[in-house]
Length: 444
Image 1 (cartoon, rainbow, N blue to C red):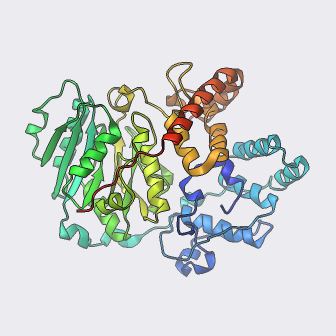
Image 2 (image 1 turned 180 degrees about the vertical axis):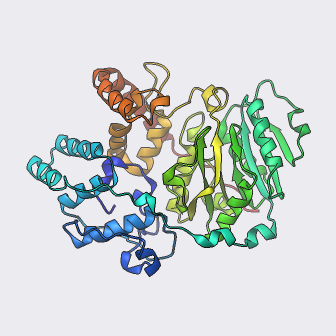
Image 3 (image 1 turned 120 degrees about the vertical axis):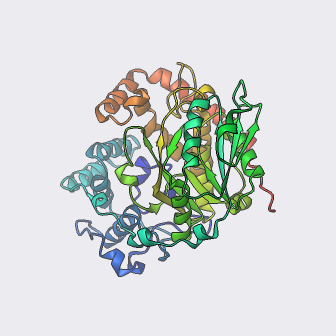
């Protein structure tokens, strides 16, 4: 990791890890093309030259650089003042104070920490998102992949959401790209056998008696006929060019995965996801990838069954194995967030917000994922950052004042929260002992 203190704010971020070949995602600034360097801003406020270089590299990735420049394989220790400067530059001042507190309570030298914190006080917050890297050729790009018309297999699991499913199927009827099949793995009760007959689509409507999301997706992928898999959901809305823009992204960037963007109904694409970039997350409700990726690294891990973060685990597994995944703002979809059905019906509606007082917090699969890939220490840091904020109801999760209130309330609820975390930790330990449940996809 280039900046050490970033581990407190992004303890389980994909890009914090190096890939299996030892490379990171962060390019060496001296290897970047001049047209990319011109879009970056050297920061001479850093004390060390090394920190200035790391900052340029971080800017490049976060502003949307997608290229083949040589990347860092190791990182050197930086002056503590530079570490705090970086945190202040890219995160809200409250998070810099949070990092300081964690460092002090972790028995780091208080004089060094407070001195470095004060020296970085005048750091100006960066507005780098105002000028992301733009790929102008995208709009005139004539995709050979689209012209070749490969069969795309669209996977949609559903559970008691026929009214929502009807809307997304109508969206698929309007797609500009026509060579696709849809596999609906239907776990609904009662099962409506004739539901799909009224649509002008190539649909395979498959009944699954067991309500199991990852089994459903794995089954659909195994039954699919296409060389490309598109992953969607039963409570989203998509634009007519959704399939086409996913395909164009795979072709334009010579990528393995096109990771689409979600936004809530009544909103728009988030600013930080409004441009192409190396994907730092993967969501099975909006993605497209070559079927060969599943053949090489396996299907979804069923340790996440009826729980959360199975898509995140798969995305990280793909990243570690060197697959190129691109965050694609042009393949966005509206997240309707159905109030019933799906994982909500299975009692797993949010990763960090249990419904009852003595239910595990977070859901055990979350800690299974964190501990498996990032280790115990990073998992604990993730708990410190996420659990106090999860006290506030989901609808307020983007309200800064309410999040601060939640952190304060968590102090009074600490005994109950500790019990919830201990329950989750033990259940995650059981999952780790059992090991992953990743089925291999036979190569045809």
